[in-house]
Length: 150
Figure 1 (cartoon, helix red, strand yellow):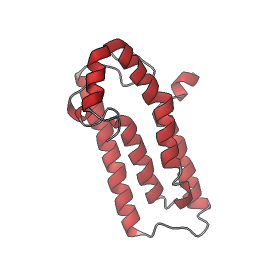
Figure 2 (tube, rainbow, N blue to C red):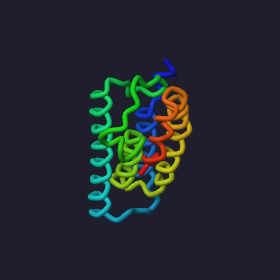
Figure 3 (tube, rainbow, N blue to C red):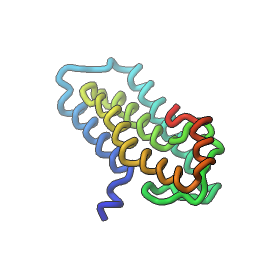
Figure 4 (spheres, helix red, strand yellow):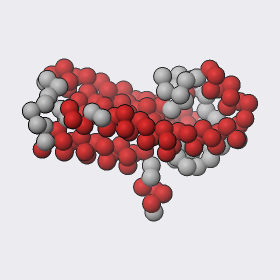
């Protein structure tokens, strides 16, 4: 049961709830300043969701798992994966950054780099280790031509 709770959407949801609580109940007089923050927040949330959808479609096309902690059947290098090795995790971070702006949760801004760090340590590094073992030279070439984030 706990393994199913240790997935990126749960961490994203927890950070988003913290940001919402901070912005709603504890603004402490801080604000990003209205319309531009809402607009930029919407762009970031939409961009993050788009990245996740593009990655999901590409992984389904190659019939490999999207579930962390599982071994991939195929190393996907096409589509959005030709631009970033971790579009879903990047999408999670963009969604949180956008929500922080939309919730006007200035003091929750440190949650964004904290989520990035957590995703990298708990998911990205172990996944890349499994890919490195399974796909060896192919994964090394992929790492040389495609950055981890952007």
